[in-house]
Length: 429
Image (tube, rainbow, N blue to C red; front, top):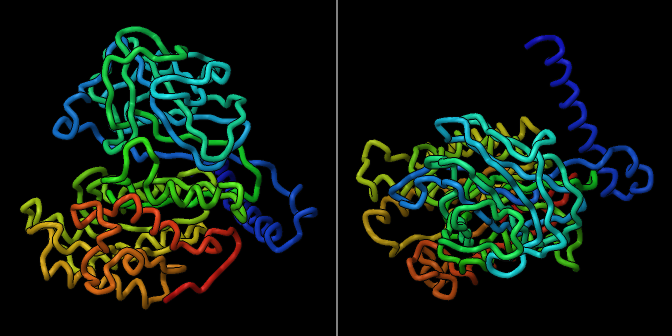
């Protein structure tokens, strides 16, 4: 590292410390004096964790050629100035995006016409994203309320080949016939998908007191089995609690769940230890992390027939300790969520030995002092008369993933005081 880079890094660390001090002062009541101490800053308001294209999961992800994609994202916090992130993290070659537009979502594939904004990249209307890279758009002025649905339209003038995506979008994505339809009020539809492509983040300029909580997890965080187009994942319900009119304070909620994800091995997406820097630490404005990962580490080796990937409860706990260390190194609060029941989810994913591991992991989460607090999702959605099973009212039907009501109950159980910057709580059962 050269002298300039070292100085810049030191400056960033210093500003992070100062920001935390000022936020604590704001929340302690010294608002008038502290409010002018820091400028507004960029905060991620919506995210989708990038994944490598996988034809086994989506035959349609063979790429796009001369078509327009319109994708819908419900943000958490609002603002007046926005920008987007596009990721070519798993691309094998530079990717040309011919045009990008941002607008308020209307109905279906339509937008609110007066809200349409052309996004530029370094002042240009098109951008080539190098293989493995991401790009940020130039900011645009657009007033958006919290919990607003945005539409991001991307035009691909030449064949892309398979692209970086997020497989479990739980949201309808619209693909046009050939043509640049990024400005179309009503996008002509050739086909639809339930996945997201290239779009990995939306950011807003927010006040210095605003932070973001990252929900790091697997399919239960990704919202598997929730209602499509309803935004009924548990992070969505948490965002509503933190950003509706009655919210005690506002905070961004970032869903970084990947269906099938594990802490220590690859199934879908990079393992959680491998993606922690990208999906958590690099997110602008992040102050808190909720970790709900590990059930796939228990169940997937048997389900996939990979006995060499069997892990012990101690190895899962060791992975948590690594995430805690890395979060604390950056000054983040990190909360451990207990693993939810999975009995009757089907063998060999479920087994009595796997249940013993789950209970051992949960006992450690509840009893230790390394996480900053415990969020006991297991206790919230289990059947009190048969605690190794989901409560029927919260079961989507597969006995592993919660229903919409289950996801809502999970979010409702979180003590919002844990997500207030600068506040430290003991919240252990």
